[in-house]
Length: 247
Image (cartoon, rainbow, N blue to C red; front, top):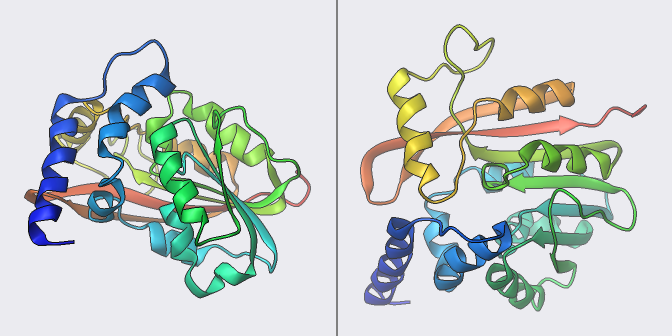
């Protein structure tokens, strides 16, 4: 792709972002209207925005023949982050409500035979049998019923299975924040307001809820650059939790 083509792609994505998430009768219709015009350029633009995905996936402790589900998996781009370990994965099921992004996932499945794209609600869909890992990659902030998505993810895991989450976030106010990085008042106000225009809901309750529900876990907090905002750094986290063997 030439620089001019890449710039045109960025302009198309930025134009849609500036217009924001449309108001529609259903969440699926909103996702389709919002991401459909971006779908050709989605992966390339988000490569610079959605940081920590490869590090999360490479850190997941998976057995040979693992069955993996990604809720809100969109184009299936994250499947490629498994790299050389992809040959040890038995299946990767990508679940999403956005049909245009799933079309890209189906195109990717031609190169990754383990991959299957499923148009379904992440809070309700269940695999045919329990799985070894569930991934939520910049999806939790896009799902209105985020508690339902977490509960569904944990329910479909085998005992000892792993839940991997990477997403934007902000901390709770100082009086409510028990552990982890403490964000200043400007950060806690600016980023939720900035992303809300595009249907991304940063919520200080996400990470504490994950901590509570997955007793054995590890967390990495960091900040990432934002395309075309050279001085901006948005907070994000990587979370890996293990489902108890007796659950």
